Each structure stands twice: as C-alpha cells, then as structure tokens.
Amino acid sequence: MINRSNHASGAPRASTRSSRRRTPRREETADSIVTALTDVDSKTVVSLDTQVSAGGTNFSQGQRQLIAMARALLRRSAIVVLDEATSSVDFKTDAKIQTTIREEFTDSLLLTIAHRLKTVIDYDRLLVLDKGKLVEFDTPLRLIEKEDGIFRSMCLKSGYFAELEASARAKAERDRGQ
Image 1: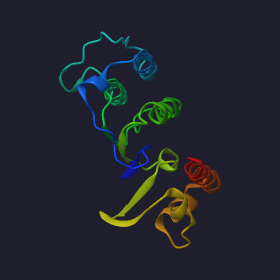
Image 2: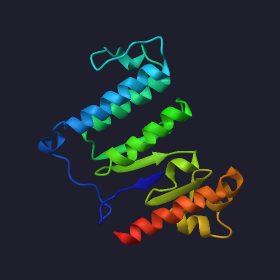
Image 3: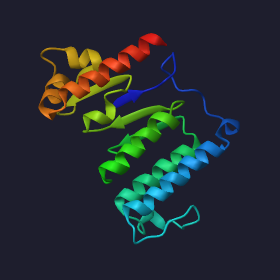
C-alpha cells in the first residue's frame, strides 16, 4: 500500500456535502474518462447516460475500473483506495489515468496497491510488503537510496532504475520547495 497526500499535515481534509459539488473541471475530466471507456472497447458506445448493470457486467474489467475512477472523481472522495487500478487497461489509458490521479485527487488520501513502480514513485510514502509483512516504509527517495533495500532491488530489477531514481529525486525536490 502506498499513501499519498498533498496536505502539510498528511491527513485528508474532511469531506462535507458542500465540498462535493461538481465543478465544470471535474465533469470535463469525468467526461474524458467516459471517452476513454469507448477507447478501451471501441464496439461499445458509452456516454454519461449509459446504464450500468448490476456489478457492471455490461462493461469489460478495464471499463469498470474507469467507471469507478470517474465516480470517485465526481464524488470528491476524501479517501480513495486503488487496487491495481490500471491493471486491465493499455499503457496509453494508464498514462491518462495516472495524470488524472495526480491532478484531480490532490485533496484526497490515496491508498494505492500497485506493482508498476512508475505508478507510485512520486507518492509521499511507500509501504513495501513481503509475504504479507511490512518490510519497508519511507519516502521513495530514501527507499531507493537504501543499499540493501527491497524497494531498491525491485527498482534495479525493473530495468528503469535511472528513471525511477530521477522521479524520486524530483519528488523530493518539489517537497523541499513547498
């Protein structure tokens, strides 16, 4: 699990009904997610008015992931749990979703379960599990710099170590500048 919060205190802001009003920007973003639904399966025409059957069985797994993301976005959820949120979508759609997460969920506490290291390398804190046990917890940069660390080993094995390290350093620099 990974924890990401842009608040100085690290805690999410309280969510109230008045703060959950839809804004044109969020509706535009939700609409672009709906457009991505059609991109995932071009045989299905999807709009904001499309009915979702029980359990979302009239959509593919990737489409259901996108619908859940749009719902969380429009609700302005204070806490968002993402469990391999982009595992069933192509890399182009994944990139769009990651951009949306970073731009639109800045006031939310994100708990993310991910295997793609690029997905979480710019989060505030990473929690690394091994066989269900907590083995590491720190900022991405501190974890990537830990010589005998499991996270560092994962980054080295990924084939993207330099890119991951650069992203972790950039995140640390941004945090210092705030």
